[in-house]
Every structure is written in C-alpha cells, then in structure tokens.
Length: 281
Image 1 (cartoon, rainbow, N blue to C red):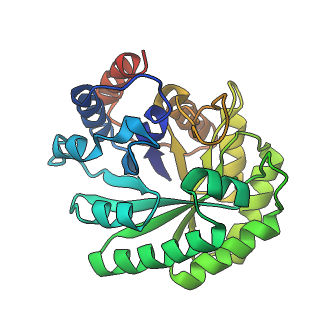
Image 2: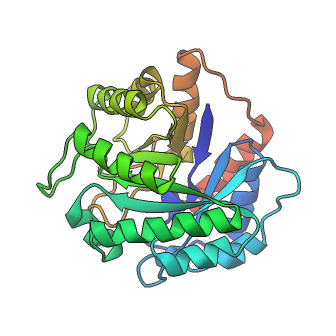
C-alpha cells in the first residue's frame, strides 16, 4: 500500500500564510515519517493559490538525505510543469484534470479539451526528464454543477489518458460527496478495465466518514491512498465550505482493520502531529 501525505492540499486553502520556515520544519518532519510520497507544494499562479508562492524556497530547505519518500508537486499548466520538472528532487508532477467542464474552467481557466492538450505536453516532458505524471480526475465521483457524470465517463477519461501514456491516475472526490458504494463501484470498474494503471484514491470526507471510505477503496483493490494529518484542507476552488482530506491517522487505522500494516517512524509521526497544531492554528 502506498500512502501519500498531502500537506500542500491541507495548507492551500488556509486564510493565513504559513511562514516558509515553519513549512520547511513541518515538511522535514513528514519526510522522516516514512510515507511513500509527499505532495509538498505546487507551481501555480500565486494569485490563484497564494499559500504556495514559496514552494521553490521550501524545496530548497528540505532535507532529502535520509528519506526514501518521493516528492510530488502540483501544476496547473505547461509553464508550471516546466518549472517543476527543472528540479531534480521532484519525482512526480500532479495535474488536476476534471471530469466536470464547469470545474475545469473554474480550477484552471481551461476547457477539458485544452486540459488534455496540456496532459499530452506534460507527459512528453515527463518522459524526456525522467519524471512521472500523476493525473487527478477532479469531480471523479460526481459534481454539484449538473455536468454529465457516470463511472463510464470516468472510464472514457481514463482510456484517453492511457493512450497518452499516463500510468498513475487518481479519481478525486473533490467535494466529499462519494459513498462507500460509489467508491467501490468506480474503482472496481476501473481496475477491471485498466489493470495496467496504478489507481490512487484522493478522497475528501466529512468528520467520521473517512474509515468507511478507506475500507471501500481497499475492498475495490486500491493500493494508493492520499491523506493529510488531522484531515485538514480541501480544494479552495470547489466550494465555500471546505470538506477535509482523509485524516492520515484514520487511514492508517482503517488499513490496519483491513489487515494492511504501514511501517512508519512513530517518533517522527508524533513530531509532525505536534507541528501540525502550529501550522494549522
């Protein structure tokens, strides 16, 4: 099981700016925990996401000498992808491609067709520079805008991505509306149809919903799950009231309940939990 910790997603919607030195301390503590991947920052317009305007400075302060955790940065366009890909320490570029036309415009000011053009260019960039592209299918479990949605629609998007060479795809419950039945049905459908793809679950949840969502994903065969300590965060472009990320501590417990153990550094975990109180104060 690959556990992806997402402090970028947790921090990006905060109204107050988290000082760069505190970000660095927090991320360095997370790097010592033992997560597979750290979604640490984003190369996007500071006007759109002011919280992430210091991502390059933060990256320079990270201690990568004693960790196996890989770094992922979110990008919203080709310019951001080129900037992120210029850093050797970054392994993954993450791009939000929406199943909803309305949300694609809202999130990146582009149509879905234009976003697919970006994906093609980013995949070529990743191939040339030995990076990996992770495509997040925003509104992957439905949307509040009335745009067409079904598991078959998600399957059609996935098929196009596979043709472009994308190998990691994460349907995302952007507004936290999914049910365990929907989660199991969607991932079951996708995993049967595209066994060569590494599917991740990027789910948001209201309080107490996280464990049942994690268990549904596991039952469907998902082996890559995103979370954030204490369940902070969410997409500021999705709604006025943010629905939080899956709390990492609840993911770990739910996986344990399903017989899946994750080896983590408990001392670093406690340090990160303590620091999180300052980051999200």
